[in-house]
Length: 325
Image (tube, rainbow, N blue to C red):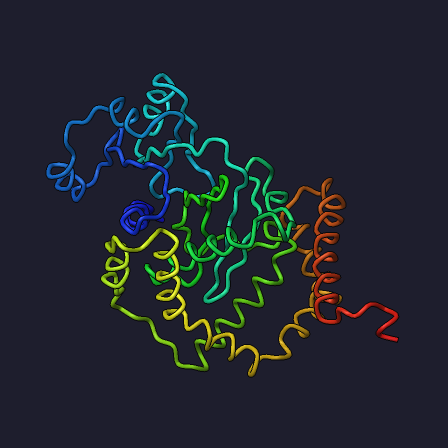
């Protein structure tokens, strides 16, 4: 998915996006339309000068990338030119690295709901999401949710993921144009049942209330907030959150779920804890991994799903055993 517009928009709104620049193709694509565009907009440029302006270390990554395709960490000019020469027909961004960050947060948004997860990109996909419910301070976690919801409301995305790096109390969005992100059980594991519930709730809410797409992005409302010099960064985020919650009808959605779908949590819990889900998981493992790894991954995902079931049962009935008797 094209990410440049997303970077430009959120920089315009004042978010703490690392310094980012788009550089022309190393090998321009052979396309009639591109020839015209290149003749108007591709000017002579100095790659080293742009990189110095962004600052080392930096990342080179495709403007329409996904799944870390074509991403390189660049420490010096030699690595810069090597990565650029190898980029071929991929159009690339240069983005400053957020050095010394404390945690990588990846938030998955489905309609008016957002799940913020601790993300470990250096690990294999089945291990990247850590089950950790307190890895962010409450105010930082709320800011991560606000940023994700702002991005989605601005672009009218109702299914998207947002990646942020947290350093101290600063939240730096680094990749947030991921509409229709991966929600496979082999990726989300513990968080998979939440995602399925959220998809059902949002779909039913939109259908039952007659929610329709809005063609006008209403960007003026966001820019008016961005241009106010009397507001602090936190005050601007709060104003953006109001606009975003208005777009997603967050309060109406919460009331709808509580009053019209009160039994859905229990139904999903029963399904996930039952034999049908166990068969689904086993079939997915067999279809995804080599035969010699079936037992390993069956145990891995069964344990994580079992942890979700236990947590949901505790949330539904928080009283200790003695009190239940």
